[in-house]
Image 1 (cartoon, rainbow over the protein chains, first blue to last red):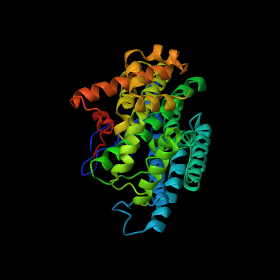
Image 2 (cartoon, each protein chain N blue to C red):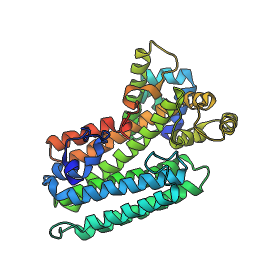
Image 3 (spheres, rainbow over the protein chains, first blue to last red):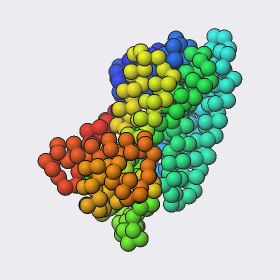
Image 4 (cartoon, each protein chain N blue to C red):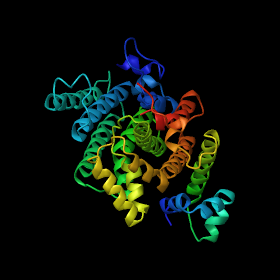
Length: 289
Length: 76
């Protein structure tokens, strides 16, 4: 796995699917911070396993259609696989040839982030109609926290000062939010073109409920009831979202996050190839989830 | 005033939308709408995306932001 992570982004391994470019985030941040990316390998591998575990648990908890590999197993054994992935992540963090100076901090950060993500997921699963501010807080505590962790882990492996690490964290949190927005925009595009979506359009729906008139909100609730709240092609829902300016709002949010991330990166990273790759991730993030 | 409220007014008030597209900062100031400088810059960029998209789509009255090339989902 470590070898494959060091390979260039976008290249498909033999017989495998194309990897999202952000899987190399810890390595890129380590290099941008002036470190040898090999130093970030254990953290990068652990982060990828944590991603796989979180993605699997999220799919099960949201009731998404199962992926082919775990469909015959069912959700119980699949949850058990996720537990194993998290345990392996823990082992990887302590697997280096010799203890890294920031190893304790790295391990603590990993599991504090898992707790933060779990807490936000609990809120997501138990609060039926979160406000727009709630949705942003949840996105920040899930995708944002997860990507922030990757960037902090990579930057710390380079041995830089914690004040500089915080800029990488800001970059990562912003990138995570961009990926979240990309998910929602991808779902909207899919639903509009007649394909099934995979998400609940949390941000655009919360935007709509925050700004729409009571009559428009009622119309939206009726449209959602007509499809049992599922993201099946529901022209009424999409038309209401479009006419409310949800797309413009998400695009403005994309631009705001890109600015914030690029500014943070400029404060910390060395202008080199890795710096440029990290900037390019900001441009592609809304479509790379 | 929050960004979402200003965006909603742009989406639902043609006169306001037209004024904003001509002079974003001036219109916000005249209406007593305050946004942080980074939010003004982000809104200006999003409005520009909107115009470019509308032009590409042949001047459609309702730009199809969901199908902006930068937001097309990728197959993996």
